[in-house]
Structures are given as structure tokens and as C-alpha cells.
Image 1 (cartoon, helix red, strand yellow):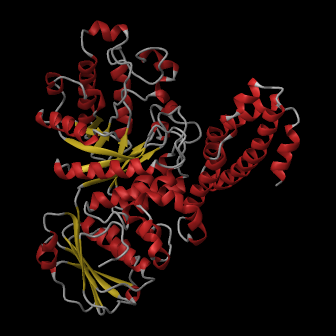
Image 2 (cartoon, one colour; image 1 turned 90 degrees about the vertical axis):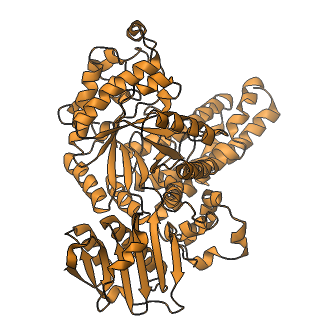
Image 3 (cartoon, helix red, strand yellow; image 1 turned 180 degrees about the vertical axis):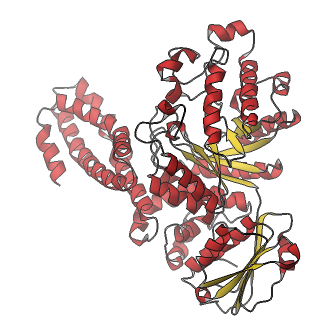
Length: 603
């Protein structure tokens, strides 16, 4: 059956042509082995009446059955041994949902929700047997530069459940409500303790496990900028990297890890980062240690790991700093550390990933993979992910997860190259590849060719009749961003996301795509007295900067809905600082541009 769900279920079977209607008015029985207010709340969100029933016999079957329908726990055996599995039956006179875990029942309810939303309250009669291919299916929230408002953040966390994402890595940086080390809090943007507690509760309510990410070696700009810690830098001129041999380095990180762990009492993991420590081994203390950079790295990571484990957490690190370590050096790594292998592209991506995965596994080290739904991609000015690269990277990691029997993938989503860098774009524009990754983490065999139409229907509310016809056969999964401007009038859901993408494209046309002025500005410097050059530059200024002015107004209007004022200003400056520098240069060459500028602004 072709139903527009995300993720696509593993097995869907029709039970007949008659649709099932009026479900929201039904009363159902909720059979669960113990109390779980999350399941009750999710069920009450659909049905008019819910009766809780303690399952007889003490078996661990979770179920939801319409009133008057026989309870049939044997049905749950269809998903025995599967991750988060459930069986859903809808028919003209009944609904049945069975699972062997609370999360399985919850995801079955989410499937039912999607069916009801898609059908306007009526759904097809069908049987769904569904489960996740991967145990850990992780999204990523990067809080280093620009990110959603707190209210939108809670909405996004809740939305992860709709797409069956069960883990969220949060890179807080200075946004945590540190207690003892309160000077690490961002003065205006850090969560209050109440806000952070509500964020974690929202995740829990939607079966999302939060894993805190605390950089512990590199990318420490927000820590090593403080005078008390400057002396711990590997080299003074690099603000982000810690010397592992310097007295006080471990003690500083141990204190920070204690705070992070205390703020996440229910998280099983603590991600220590530890990537891209580029200057490691260059200072006098490191050279005097007699250790290679890799051996110094592993020695320090083992100290961090021991501390993390003492706090009741399993440590995770990125793989890149041990990629070239010898077998003897890798053998010294604490076997309780989970190494996350991240490779985001390249023609040897899968081959390189297999090499390091096998190397680590042979040493007895647990591994998981990491794709990226947004990253550098040789484009620091991107306003939304470089989609053809991201789709390929996600699919490559899904294939690796199957061939290498990986239990999970973290689909990273970087907001910037580093905390002092330029933002790649806003979080909202990355939901398309993020939910593509979510679908294939759940169902590796999901149909790629129909994802674009299913996403436009589920995420943007486009009618399925608008997404069919001969022309839709020509669109590829990578066409999402280019289609948004023409589809914008029909968008009914997540409209701000669509407006944001449209605003970014309207900015890109004069700034990057359509012969932007700065490509020709050198001619004015070389030929200041040339009439033809001056006339040419006037014309390019009139058209290009007029459109750029309007694009800036549009972008500011959308950002005002999505970001706090200081973040909005940061993002606007990151996009317009350079073209406005070029404009100032042109003003120095052509002194009467004010008149043209006024016309551009008035048009």
C-alpha cells in the first residue's frame, strides 16, 4: 500500500477498500503492565475516551484496543526481538495496537496520528507490522551560534517523536545553567534551571533520550577564553585547545563534567567530544612527555573516561584523533569508551569508515556511526544544507550500519564550523535531511523516490493531489529547497520554515548566483576614469543592490519570528557584512551612487 507516512513502515497490508472513520470519537482500552503517563497522554490525544486496564497474567504486552474488541496479546509476537516494534490493525469497526515495550506502543500511536492527520480523520483499513532497524536513532542540536527560541526548541523536541527519533545529542556549550562554575554561563542566553529541567522533561515525555555533549579537549573557546584558564591552552594563540599535560587541565575538565552529569541525572551517556585537537603535541609540556600526540590523547581520554564512569555515565568520543594511532596505542584506550566514527563525505567514505570501524572493533572497542545532515561541505556561506552531499552521506551510513551491524547512528547537525565561525544557516532549514535520516534509520529499505512528496505532505501540509501527476516523476529527493519558492503559497504547516528557505534563496540570487557586483568591482579600481566601466558598475549596482536590499528586509522579517534579536543581528551581519563592504568600496569609486541607492530602496 502507498500511504504517505514518515518513516515508511516495514510491512503494510490492506484489509479492504472501506475507509475507517470516526476513530477520534471512539473509546479504547489501554493495556499496560505498569503506569506510564506518557502512553495515557498520547492515547488521550486521539480518542474521546480511554480506560486503563491492568493486563492479566503479568505478561509484558502493551496494547490499545477499541471498546468491545477482544484483547489479543499474541499479535505482539510479530515484532518479538525487534527494536521499538508494534502491530497496528485498523478496520471499519475496530482499532488494535500491540507492542512489547512502552516505546513500541508509543510509536504505534504516532503512526496512527500521522494516518489521521493525512486522511483528515479517516484512515485506510490496514495492518501494519513495524519496527526500527537501528536501536539508537539520534538527531543533534547545536547551541553554539544561532538556534531556535526556547519555545520552538520544545516544539522541535516533541516533533522528533513523530518521526521516531529516540535520541538527541545536545551541544550546550555555555548555555547550561552551571552552578559551581556559574561564570561559564552565557550572560544572556543560558537556560535557567527551570528551563533546562522542562527541556529534559519534554524529551522524556516523547521517549527521546538526551545525551549531553561536553567538549573536553578541543573546541573549548568558551572555556579557555576566561583568564583563569588561559594558561591551560596548548599554545597561547589558539583559544580552543587544551594541553593534556598541563597541571590543572584534568582538574578543570573533571569539575565541568561533574556539573554536566549532575544536570542530566537520567542520561546513560556523556559525549566528551575530543575531536579536532589540531595543536596537540606542539607545546613544550607535550614534547617533554615523550609521547606521540595519539598516545597523549588516549592517556588524557582515559582520565576523562574514568571520571565520567565514576559519575554513572558511559563516555563517548569522536574518532578522528585516534584515526592514525598505532594498534598498540589504540589497545591502551579504555574499553568502556564508545567511539563515534564520523565521516561526512568523499569518494572513499565507506572504505575509510570500514577501516577505522574494524580497527576499533578488533581492539574490543564499541563503535557507532555518525553521518551529517548539515556540515561544512566546502561552503561556509550555506543557508541550508548542501543537500546532494547530505542525502548521499546518510545513505552511505545506513548501508554501513547494515553491513557492519552498527546499533546506531548519530545524524549530526552542525550550526557552524566552530563557535567563533559563521553560522551555516538556521536549524529550521535542516529538518528535511534530518527527517530523511530518521526515516532510513527506522527503515533502511524506505522508498527514496517518494520521500520528497511524503515530506511535503507531512511536514508542510501540501495536499497529496498537488504532489502527483506526470511532472512529479521528474523531481528527485534533492529538489526540496529549489521547489519551496514555487510551492510556498500552498504550504499550510511549518510555514515559517518555508518562508525562511524562500528568503534565503531571494538573498542568494543577487548575492551569489546572478553575477554579484563584487565579481566585477576590481575593474572600477583598475579603470577609475573609464566611462564604460563606471556605467557598467552603475547598472550592476542598481539591479543587484536593489534586490539585495529587499532580500535583507525579507530575511529580517522572517528572523524576527524565529530568533532572539541578538541572534538575528548576528545572522544578518554574517550574510550582509561582505556585500556591504563591497558597496562601501563602490561608493568610493562612484560618488553619486546615493541617488541610485535611494531608487533601489524605494522600488
